[in-house]
Image (cartoon, rainbow, N blue to C red; front, side, top):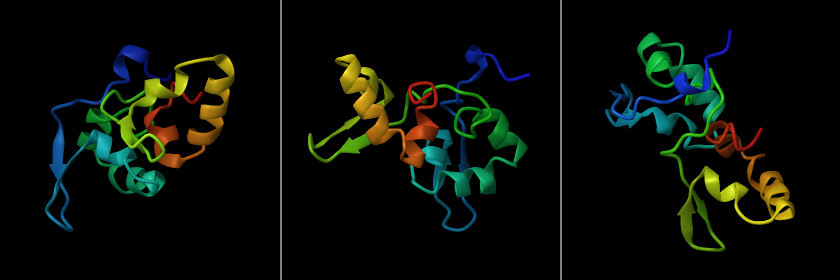
Length: 113
């Protein structure tokens, strides 16, 4: 059975240190790059990360409230909720434009359904 929506929340306090460059990362980092599939493959097989980051690891469907992406045209960062603002046509257009990007589709799973 898939996890219920309430369980599909990344632990906001969970972090780990990458062995390669010694940087500290959190669950949002998993989806904050176009190579989200590679990051999930590399890190989500680790039990602690998988348990703390169900949304980031894609084991359930929800939007990551910590995730933002940059809109060059508007020169600002926005979250998943921005995609579903405004008219229905605008929402359809924004889903087509943004939900095809791997990192946005992964971080905004519920919005991009």
